[in-house]
Length: 313
Image 1 (tube, one colour):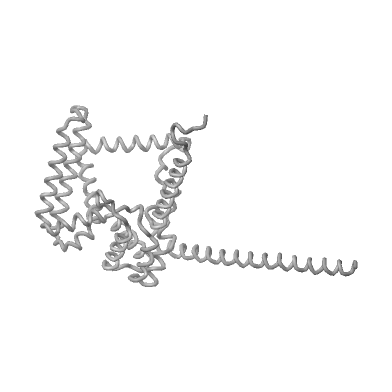
Image 2 (cartoon, rainbow, N blue to C red):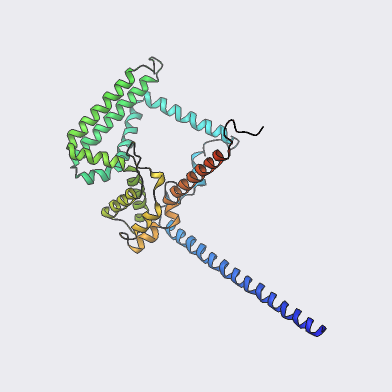
């Protein structure tokens, strides 16, 4: 009898050891697979980083250190923020009084403006002369608005006086009139549509820059298709008709992008390196997920609260 019991115990022990060994083997296999995936992603990111110019290949910590390098190391975080705010305020005050600095500021403004509206200029087929007129009209509006703000905050006038709103409206109306004259009704309608879809153009522009740096540049036609895909995957606010960019279906965008991007382009397009930065697809997806989670938690806590007058005594 004892021999049978011993044999059963031995067999049972062998089975337990085999099960444990199988689980361990599967766990190791999964771990190795995960390590391979992580290694592949890291290698891909390093490859892409290597193709960036030195000015683009900086960590966030490096940039923060550069921005605060003129501040004493003994300063606390709060002190650094206060100093940064004070520096910005002093620069704003100087801009109001220094015509030469204002001229330099608007030279920079024109560069950014031409970059932001470059796709629209191409879509509308504007000539160099028309582009210059359009840019000049917008610059005149910006300069006038700066003058209004300087007077409003000078302390010589009441900032709540309705005259400021009237002046701002007159400035906007003059700009709109100039744009209609330059573009015509059809071109002006295109401008309004471009402004409505600007968040999609901004993302597509950043993506195009990333692909260009990675050596797989997009054509303008591909960029336009990406914009159209983002717009189609983004719901619209029924009141304002604006795109609700925080609700874009990025899975749908990625699926459709495979139809007009080359395999090499899509590899970069779908990489974490290109999309994990603030404003990238993964960053936007995270913001959307957090927003949904917060709303769900808020709704849950609201439902769990007792209705006034029904509390137990």
